Amino acid sequence: MNKLDTALVGSALKAAGFELTGSVKEADAVLINTCSVREHAEQRVFSHLGHLKHIKESRPALVVGVIGCMAQRLGKQLLEDKTVDIVCGPGQIPQIVTLVREALDGNKKTLSITEKIRQKPDEDNTLDDFESAYGIEDKEIPGQAFIRVMRGCDKFCSYCVVPYVRGAEVSRQPKVIIEQIKKLAGNGVKQVTLLGQRVNAYRYTTGEKTYCLADLLSMASDIKGIEWIRFVTSYPSKEFFDEILEAMATLSKVCNYLHLPAQSGSDKILHAMNRGYTCSEYLELLDRARAAAAGIAIAGDFIVGFPGETKEDFQATVDLVKKARYKNCFIFKYSPRPGTNADEKLKDNVPAEIKRKRNIELLDVQNEISEKLSRQSLKKTVRVLVEGLSKKPHLNQAGSENKPQLVGRTTADYIVVFNGPKALAGQFAEVKIKRTSALTLFGELSH
Ligand code: 5AD
Ligand code: SF4
Image (cartoon, rainbow, N blue to C red; front, side, top):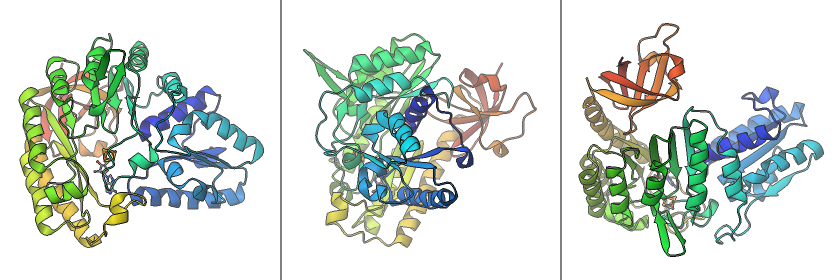
């Protein structure tokens, strides 16, 4: 979501005649897009602001803007910081060009956020128009694009800040989404990733018909030029689950990958998290997914050290990870977020050191599983959509000058590293796997 917002803001500024630079030294304005999901992410923003404060002492004309979830969460408080000129929430990004211009011209401070964040927004196309206009510009990974199909979240998991900063759940019109994908395909995009906090809960009713995610997958599959379709993130619920699995099984363009966060393996903790399912219900969903879509890769998210998590609760999480056989997992230490139910009603009573140990232990358990699963690709030839130059070329042998190390992903989201011509970025390639690690497959280009 944040990557998409950053790309949209960048595209809008470029279209308005601004030039983007990666260097603060060269910049007239610095915008920080922010995440509020964990305290650590917010602390990093404060330390960036501290750094910018020094720069601003010698260059008072430098404009500093904070955009995204932290802007929405902290609003006025952020604007009180002398360093900050613009505070712009996720719902106000279409105003960013105007806000930057005004700040550059007039040295004026502006706060632009949603007043009543939980109120369902009126029929207003500003955000949609902004997404459609600038969603086709980003070229960070050639051949790929993100498309938001839903905004906000109504789930209120007790630890989570998202419903308070991204607002009420709203599904975008299928017509608008499909038009946007068609435009992207016309611009050479081959893979689209449909985005939503609970993307599998997508629901749009018009007249007699209710569209669900499976309908979007099917309509997107009909678009010429689009070859792979992904969607993230899914919520473990039965609603539309069979329809979506059926779409995965029957539509060849839909990638064989499901990100289905469990968060915990303990029913007691799942209840305290307000997740609305038990561990065995969750495992049943995994069974159904594997039965419907052969070879599907599943990824998970877990929070360790949630309030009240005992040794036994954590052990239940370890057992779930062993049973689930995830391709990979994202594991986080619980971070209390102001305004959430968990923060207001439960004591953050698992010591930091225990959170750290549980995080490491769970990662180790998952790592062993990931290694085993990766090994199944050994000696096989896999189809890869090439993203570009590898960022960690030291992991593999250095290539010759015209065959640098490239990185791409398979349909099941495995990262594949191999040597090949740079021009392959944005194209499909066949790669024979020669070596594997937990998170990466290493191979050679097949001819
Ligand atoms: N503390 C730690 N992790 C969190 N996540 C969401 N909120 C918190 C929190 N307060 C994790 C969840 C979610 C992922 C995006 O971030 O695992 O799936
Ligand atoms: Fe947060 Fe739960 Fe919504 Fe995901 S489903 S964004 S964890 S409230």
